[in-house]
Length: 420
Image 1: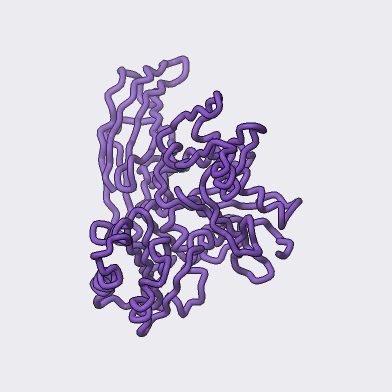
Image 2: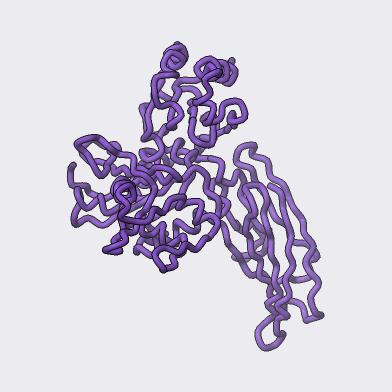
């Protein structure tokens, strides 16, 4: 593998297996690495093992082999442990879920040294199926323990990786909408990317349809079920009257050749691709974008974790009344924690402006200024903090900060909710 100008890494972290890709400056596309390149074994089991005799940590296939020989204790379900903030007792030692995840990430990322022994990671993007705040925060903590801080690391969802992957392919692949069938342990899901080319920048959005109630993962083993027939009916229903340029298929549910004939039938008028590295490649493209090598600066990517609206406060600033931006659209909702301080002067309302980048509509949300102790005009500071409970629910927290020694603050807080 070539020596890179930068070490750009995409990491697909899943509950069962993980995958690592690096951006190649020879081929100008990601390449997947793994513990056994000769056998092209790239999927790494997301497990650890602590050996009983040496107390050494093993990961992936080595961990499974050691456990099979009775040499160590298996630790699996790492992501679920992080979500629940569990503490695990192993060989009379206690480990937090984050510390276990840090060991797995550290050990697996050590594979990079086989190819780039002296290169530090320039940018790393970890992609997971769903970016619940607890999981994303745990991953950031684990990376921070490794010395990889947020200035060179990001956590995105699989839909975010899908967007980055598609928009880095040949433009003929996405002249129209692009579809993805993902069949994994959670069942079958369909994702469709649509581009609004009438806006500047161009907006690329993703819609999701959960089909797991109709085609779950355990159904693969039901002998009485015609799996191919069931999937064909679902695919035809989903794609009916849709203008799709390209279809992608991923997930271990598609392993084997049971869906081959269905995919051939879906090829008519479309390109069709089956593979298991889409998400790690997409994360690698996202890492390249974050490293400063902008390829998608003319696009806004809206996946299932991104805000579709900006939030501003109408206030007096820089010698005029205008909208003071609190958060832009197209940012992950769980990462937003921003605030400003204001000095009210006779106002009875706070005016928040919500602008949807999809519809271009602007909505004014007027909230009452909280009642605080009687003070001279302009002798009160209010701290206004914005966070989100979900992609569509904003939380406004207002705190009485007073005005220094002249008018001490009470510290009293008020909370409001705004729907986006």
